[in-house]
Image 1: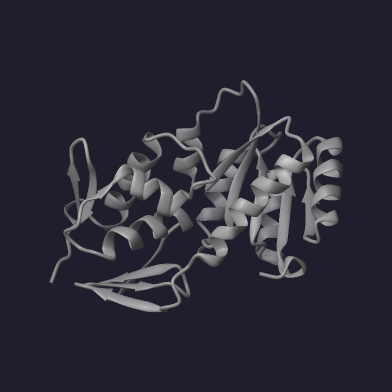
Image 2: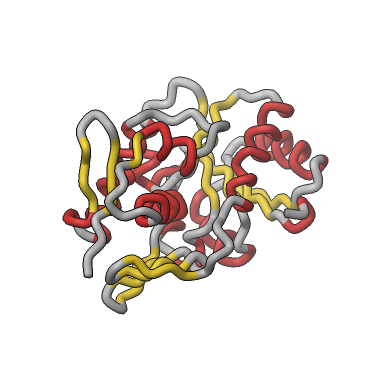
Length: 228
């Protein structure tokens, strides 16, 4: 994807961080918009529909967790990548962030070159989508263009990582996908996440789609059970 067509929204209440991050990303050729709070971030996300949001965790008025949840509740923004931008030692856990719909974490302080490398790794996921637009599995249709599924004719919008996890499991109903395969396929080799991350996303999928569509194989992983 052409960098000049990639729009990144950076949200942080520290002016110095906004300036440094913005400068380095613009130098790489990305289009960058900045704001210093979560409320404005939601407004801007609606307006510019960025490919990626770097979201500070601790902010006044509305913190990163709540901001992420509100963005993920907007169907038209479900395919946006969201990475929390967190200071070392903050109390929020990664599990809470992933439950809110985050795709990744970037810990600050971070060197500009490392930051740019992390951003490139995140954005590579945008190019990893299957070219097929729709795929029917039992009573569920997977729509990759709109990042939604249709269950018995009802549309369900899923956050990006939940959608990718569901798509992987549903690509081969009955097959048990082990944790390493899930992590490498959905989160990629460039991202380090804990095993609990998968469990959190599976729980969310059970809540949204139905508990009986997913089976846990203890000590191995998960599989999808298709319904007629």
